[in-house]
Image (cartoon, rainbow, N blue to C red; front, side):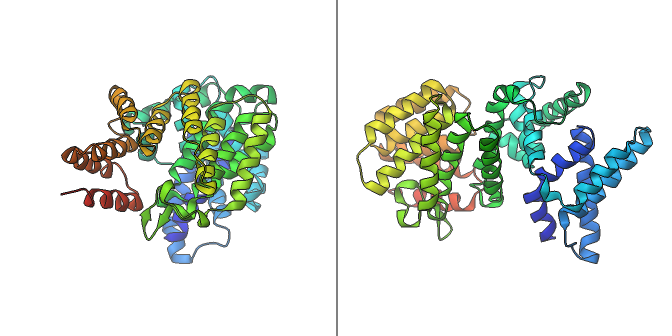
Length: 394
């Protein structure tokens, strides 16, 4: 039923945060009762019709399951019933609960490598398969780690509350990484609703921590990207930045992004997201103003890979060299990345294919494009890559 699927996409993280709070921080229990509530909705709604307040119906159904569990364990507290009654009235009044759950998942007692995946599953509602793909892990291995992390939250008695402001900075990087990972999945047409969710959460973090620079940098980065959303797809085909119609760009959002980036740099504590936003700003200026800022952009990429090296950053650096026709530099980077576990990293194969085509290595280009196509589920990207493949010289 479409309304159930839509509710799952748009409200899962909010509902799970509410139910985690209500179950005394037991994330596993909250997930269990929420899953039961969705199953119940699949049984009831097609027969009786969808309720006027789907979120409230799901909270009420899950609430009853939690109360049953607590009663069975003889630890039922009347205050929990009162809280759940209040939450049921209007679930939209509690957006900060999602931010609370983000910071709970970033608790230092939880292993660092699992914090971001844990947030993506519990707060954002991504599937095990989606998260595993993003982190180049097998779903089975990831699921085991997530189960252990939730058990740790319960056994360690990690409180479900936003920590004191003095503790937030230490957990902030993990939280921002999760929000940005969620935003990245919104590029896929199947998960577009995550874009507004990620932007909302980032604005909330900016408001909560106005003296922190990186949340503002992340907000600017996402706004630069979102400003080009309409131009990024045309007639069912993905359109790269250099081919986009700049008249379709959202100038209001671009101005907001510039303002947030300036505000971030004024705090004089630069970081990964500010450098990435500055790179996006440079690309926007190059297209809108027609300026030659190639050297400036490459310098910004060098700062990024020095301060926050990652496979993604290196691939972006290689892509910049390719777009500026400095093919040998791009080739050096791609060759160096071969030992970095990039075989399931789709952009790597796109760049390899592009480089091979430019060097006249057509059989290699065909192989690399096919590899890239096999690693994406985004129909618009598949159409784009197929067109590239079909236009190779025969």
